[in-house]
Length: 371
Image (cartoon, rainbow, N blue to C red):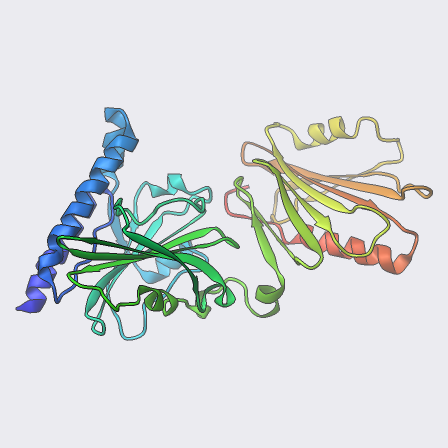
C-alpha cells in the first residue's frame, strides 16, 4: 500500500512538472505529508517562469516544454561527464527537457535522472546540462533557501569540485539541494530531495557517490595534464596548463600563451569573425606582408573535409625572430581564424620545443557544433 501511495504522489508531481516544464520535487516514501512542499515549490516555479517569460507568446513557449523519456546511453551523448545512478539505487526514469537546448551554447538539453534509494528511504532528482553558464539555475525549485553552505565534493574533479548544499524548511517539511559546476567542461549539476524530516541526512554524500569514472572524457595522462577551453562559439582547445595559459579576449576570441623557455612571446589566438570568405579575409589580414609569404591550402584543423587556408610569414633572421602563421576556414556562418605568433631564438632545441607545443594545441581543436 505504501508503494502504491508513493507512486501516486510521484505521478502527480511528474504530471505537474510536465505541464510547467520545471522540476518536480521528489517526496520521501516515508512521509507522504511532504507532498504540499512539492506542490508549493512547483507553484513558485510556475510563477517565476511566468515573470521571466514576459509576453503571452513567450510564456506559451515556456509552458509547452515537455520532458521526454530517454535511455541512459542517450543521456551520455548529451553530457560529456554524466553522473551515474548510485550503487543500490533504483532508476525511476531518465529524461530530457525538449526546447532546453536553446539555453546551452553547445546545444545540449537539460538531462534528468529520477531514482529511489532504500537507505535512506528517499526519492531523488538529479539534473545536468552541458554548455550553460556557471550561474544557471537548472534545479527548477525557485525556493528561498534557509541555509546554504559551500562544500568540496569528493570524487568529482579529483576531489576538488566546488559546490553548495542548501536546505529549506517549511511547514510541510524539508527540501535539500546539492549543486556543483564543472568549469573544465562547462556542466551544471544539481541533486535534490524532499521529506518531512531530513535532519542528519547528507545529500553531499549521495552526490559524491554519483561520480562515474567510466563516463570520464579524459583519462590517464590526458585527464591529469590537460585542460580544455570551451568557446561560446562551439570550438574546444585542449592544452597543458604547465606550458600554456588561456585568456579570453572577448566573446569570440581567446589566446593561449606559451609559458616555457623562449626568445619572446609565443601566442596562439583563435577568433570567430563574421566574414563570408576565409581566403579573402586572410588576404586582407596579410595585405602588408612581403611577397615571400607562403600560401598553402589543405584541410582545416579538427575537420575531415573543410578547406583550410594558410598564410606563413617569412621568418625574420635577425632581431626579434618573428614568425607568424595564419590559418582560416569556413565555420558556422563566418570564419574561424587561428593566428600563431612565434619568436625564434636561433637555438634549434628551444625553437623546436615551442613550435611542437603550439602545433599540438592547434591539432587538439574540436567542435561541438557543425563547422
